[in-house]
Image (tube, rainbow, N blue to C red; front, side):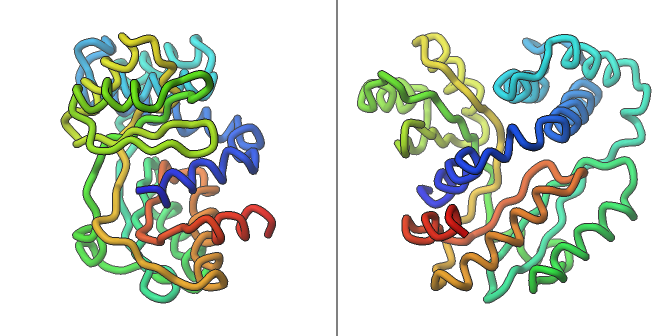
Length: 251
């Protein structure tokens, strides 16, 4: 799973979050509204999906007023009924499998933009089910690692049901079964660890290893997809080694 934590580290280094703060807030607000609507409640304690969405928003320093407005939009129904969740499937170059999670109020616009991004990146969209079987949904958490003992956090996470704990450049990444994400997050929070992100992500069952040039081409495609307004997240089965990560950071 280290390749997936490397992608998160790379994006943080390149300052993507700060550069696209407004865009991130828009995505987070949509996710919160949808979670409130689908969960039938604006109460985080009674709506696990909403709790995850709000946790992610707080980790990105989204103002409290923005979060509350998004919740009210969801439970009030204004605008949220027009939103649709779609997962698009595609391939990058050299058979790299890619999943794109979208939250949109205009399916035709989203589809056209994603098709264009794949085409520019040398990839293509495929029919539903062609790629999804290569992934499973996992819980993902990132914990601020400054002054944290890896062995101690490993034990806390493992006791709560985590699958894996990875340390990478000052951040600790915790992976859990889908159904254990909330329990692991609660255990880490109770133990006074600073959870920066907590969400469900697609995890590849097997990685695809490519040479640096081909890997970079796929990483640029993933980055292009992530920049689209309607895209919530992108997952691939590309193996990102230390050398590839270093090459992408300096590209």
